[in-house]
Every structure is written in structure tokens, then in C-alpha cells.
Amino acid sequence: MNLLEVTNLSKQYGHDLLALQNISFSVQNGEFVAVIGPSGAGKSTLLRCINRMIDPTDGEVVFDGVQMSKLKKNELRMQRRKIGMIFQHYNLVSRLTVIENVLHGRLGYKSTFAGIVSHYGKDEKKQAFEIIEMLGLTEQVYKRCDQLSGGQKQRVGIARALIQNPRMMLCDEPIASLDPSASKVIMDYLRNISTKLGITCLVNLHQVDVALNYADRIIGVNKGKIVYDGPPNLTPEEVYMIYGSAAGDLIFDVGGQHAS
Amino acid sequence: MNYLDSLEALRTQFPSYKSGVTLHNYSIKKVTKASIVMRITLLSLVILTVYGFYTFDYKDIRIIDAITQALTTFKTMFTQPRFNHFNFGQGVYQVAVTLGLTFLTTLIGAFIALFLGLFAAQNLSSTVVSNAIKSFVAVIRAIDTVLWVLIFAVAAGLGSVAAVIGMTFHTIGYLIKAYSESFEELDPGVIEALRGSGANWWQIVFQAVIPSSATSLLSWTFMRFEINYAVAVAMGAAAGAGGIGFELFMAGNHYYDLREVGLITYFILSVAIVLELVSIRLKLRLNTH
Ligand SMILES: Nc1ncnc2c1ncn2[C@@H]1O[C@H](COP(=O)(O)OP(=O)(O)O)[C@@H](O)[C@H]1O
Ligand SMILES: [Mg+2]
Image (cartoon, rainbow over all chains, first blue to last red; front, side):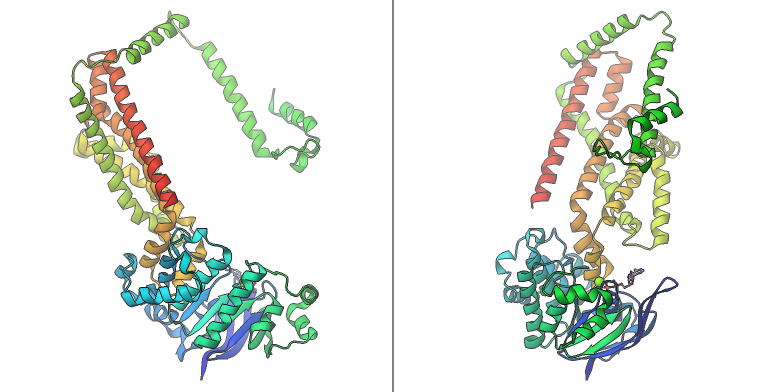
């Protein structure tokens, strides 16, 4: 069964800006999908329409058998726990420690009061430490997040998402602010999460070469439309189709950073 | 120099003035309309001040004598401080009363402002609620603390009750603005991350918003504490709220005891310095922790 089913999804900003137009695709359980496309193509909007951080204008998203648009406020919170999110700028509470940030991933499972007073169960703390160890952050557990490197921050972001016990990870340009070696570490972790833990990954990427290296499947987006959906062996013509006139840079500058 | 002349002068001095940037002398400052208006305003103020002093009606007071006498008074006040109508212990007690008034009004004000500040912050609340609170609070702030005390004195009578209510009221207005602006500085991505994981509003507030703005909140609260200390001293005299301010009023206006006025001033000042030191300490600790 498909874990995620997106049908005729559209998002309009204001009167005439169509950020997404009639997007349809489905993702199978455990798949690693890279969404690529130029800046402003609608990648971030697409990701956020899936867990309704942005409400789509039209169309339907079915995740884990549940129609997202039908959910009420509290049901939506329950559903969001099954989806982890990773961001370009990590989005950690920088004044808090690594362990405190990781445990934030459990807030959706807690009562309001338990969440406010940081009352976490023994098993939750145990799992937090296991995940932190898995991501090689044991030495940083009690460090404040503003003292970490970019790569370490992103690993904290991954840990915070993993402790939700998610079915799927939505990653919005997870390596766009990182240097090449930290980028590789992060992509390797994401790939392992998909292969070993069976968690589906939908990753927005700016770098074609990285997408081709890591993904099972590529979705190419341009001007709010899907222009490619298939295996990760794109011809230069197909890259050109996705990136338009900006493609020249990408093809000749493979391995460079293209943060938007 | 009139406005047009000064404009002309600027133009010859800075030929590229029209484009807004002075290129040839590599000035770092941009010469804009605003900065020209600013300079002209400052200049006019200086001229008016000098002109004002020159044309005062001094009657038969000779300014040199007056200044000497004032200095002598100050000298008596601050070089020969002395107890007269009360002793050290009573002085400490009166300072404690004033500090009590300060603590009470700042604490109640801060507590209420923390919650209303959350609803006044654009990023945590709806536009309607946020704007409603902000404009209401702007009105409260527009009227001075002392006036609020006098307004509440109509209902409560002059005294400590009116002082507490009035001071708290203005403190709330002041801190809601300060707090909500601190909250608004929070990175929207952090809120997005927690919302996306299923956390609810109160959890986000206590797990992300308040920890991120803690230093700023503390620093504003201390700022208000210092303001309230000064107001509490004044209220002791003006609203009969008691404390060291009332003693100052008695020593100055009733007994005309310069030495005691000096002593009380030292009392008030030393407490203010201690408060400042404590606040610096606390902020440092919070920043490095
Ligand atoms: N909140 C918003 N309001 C108006 N327009 C927006 C908003 N968010 C995104 N857009 C527009 O939607 C389009 C797609 O943006 P985005 O999804 O961020 O693209 P990408 O992530 O591929 O760079 C862009 O043209 C962008 O300017
Ligand atoms: Mg984007």
C-alpha cells in the first residue's frame, strides 16, 4: 500500500501566484524520494502541504490511510506525530541543550501540562539517549545547541524527528547550509534511516548530484508542476527540463553548493 | 542660516548629495533627507536654548551668586550627611518599605504582562487580539505612572493602595510591550518545527518561546524594577505611600534639614547600585548557563 498519496494538489498565494498546480504522486512505504527543482519551484510549499503546515488550496493528501484535509485540530496533531520534519536551518531552540531539544520530539505524545514542565517518562529518556548515541552525539548531550557545528545541529534535528517514531521524514533542503563533508554525513544518516529503519524519506534537494547518488526516485518540480517522476538516472536533457536555463550551472558545477 | 541656505551648503559640500551617497570622500554615513532634517532640528534646539537663557527674567537674582549658593547647599548636603529625625535602623526599615512596594508592583505586573504579552505577540496570537491588546496598552503607557497613581487615588484614596494599583497598571503596560516584542523576535522556524511534530500552543510557549527570550525578559523586568524603585521613592512623598521617599519629603520640605536629605540620598543611591550589581550578575549567569 502507498504510504502517501497526493492527488491534484494546488496551492495559490494571493490572486495569481500558483505555487503548486495539480500535483499528483504517491510514495511507497520505505521509499527514498528526492524532490529537485530550481529555487521558487514550490518544493518547500509541496512538503508543507503534506502535513498541513500550509493548507492547500485544492486537491487531496492521504497519509497512512487518512485524508489530511478532513482532520480537526487535535486529530491533525496526532497525525503530525507520524511525520518528522528536518529543516535547512535546523530550527532548534538554541538556548537549550541537545537532550532537551531531542525530547521536544515527544511533545505531541504528552499532555499539555507534562509538556510544559518537561515531564518525560523513563522509556522516553532511554530512547532519546539511544538515538543520540546512534547519531554520534553522546559527547554533546548536555551542550547547548548554539555551541554545536552545523552538522551536529542537523543531527540533533534528525534525532528530534526520529524520537517521534515517525512513518515518514519530510526534509527541506537538509544540507543546503552545510559543507560537503558534513553534507555527506547527514545524507548517509538519512539514507540509513530509510534503508535500516524503513522510514520513508521525502527530501527536497538543490543539488542534482546528491539527489542522483542517494535517492531511489526523483521528482522534478518546475514552476509548481511535476516535470519528471522516475528513477535516478536523468539525462542532461531531463535535467535541463527541470531546471530550465539555470541547468547549465548545475551540470557543470556538480558537487557545488546551491543553497536557496 | 535658513533651511535653503543649509541645503545649498550641503549640496556644495557633497556634490553627490542627490544620489544620497557621498562618493568622493568615502563617507560611511549616508546623507539622507532624514539626517539633514535631524541636523537642522538639533541646531535649532541649541539656538533656542541659548536664546532662552539670554532672555530669562532673572529679577534681582544675580546668576553667579545663585550658582555659588546652590553649590554650597549641595556641599552641605553631600559632605556632611547626618541622622537627625531617625536612626540607621529606621532608615533601613524605610528603604525596605520602598523596596517592598517596588517588588510587589514589578512582580504582579510581570506575571500579568507575561500572559498578556504572549497574546500580544504577532507570531503567537491572532492579528485581531494582538492589535487590540497592543493599542490598549499604548494608551496605558501614554499616561505617566504618577498620573495613574493619582487617578486610582480618586477611588482608593491617597496612600499605598493607590500607589500599588497605579504602579502595577503602568508596569503591565510597559512590560507587555517589551515582552511581546521579545517574543516576536523568536525564529519562526522553531515554532514551525515544534508545531510540525504535534506540539500544542502552550507546550511551544514554555518549551521554545520562553527559554529563547529568557534573557531579554529578565533584562526588561530589571529595567522596570529600577524604574519602579525610583517611582516608589517619589510615591512615598507624592502619594503618601510611605517608605524612604516619605522621609525624604519630610526632611526636605518639613524640617528643611539639608544634612538629612543628603543622607537619605546616599541611602537611596546605595540601594540602586546594589540592585544594578545584582541584575548584572543574574544576566551574566543566565547567559553563560
Ligand atoms: N507565504 C507565501 N506567500 C506568498 N508567496 C509565497 C509564500 N511562500 C512561498 N511563496 C511563493 O511560492 C513559490 C514557491 O516557493 P517555495 O515553495 O518556497 O519554493 P522552493 O522551496 O522550491 O524554493 C515562490 O514563488 C514563492 O515566492
Ligand atoms: Mg525552499
